[in-house]
Length: 185
Image 1 (tube, rainbow, N blue to C red):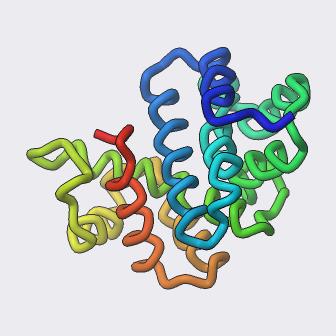
Image 2 (cartoon, rainbow, N blue to C red):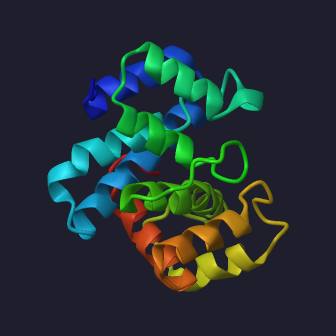
């Protein structure tokens, strides 16, 4: 089964109650949809968005089993194996050894941590918004290892490398994707 983004969100709500996790799923879903269109996969935009919504399905309840429990949960719901694999691959090198291979998987791996960093940076702004954030400001926060210390700069850099992009391109494109989302802020 390939859930629609709306169905994916309903499934996310079955395992997550906290606003943070629900918002993160929606944000990453929107970012994934934006990248699908930007990278020429527009016909798969719903699929990419569904992956973004479901990627942390297990995190709130089973943080110590993150990614592996998600595989079990999704398979239990009959979710298409491409979605299961893509969601699991965002934990590559940390929780699982499923290496991101498809462009979609690489984008998820690269942007998951980065959306958290951008969201944290937005909260520090007077506007509390990404809408007026500039790349220069984001780069400054990225370089400050103490800021949003839970967001792995190594994973973000590895994601940019997997995509064959300079870090600045990943930062700029992800910021644009978040600015384009009506669900962020």
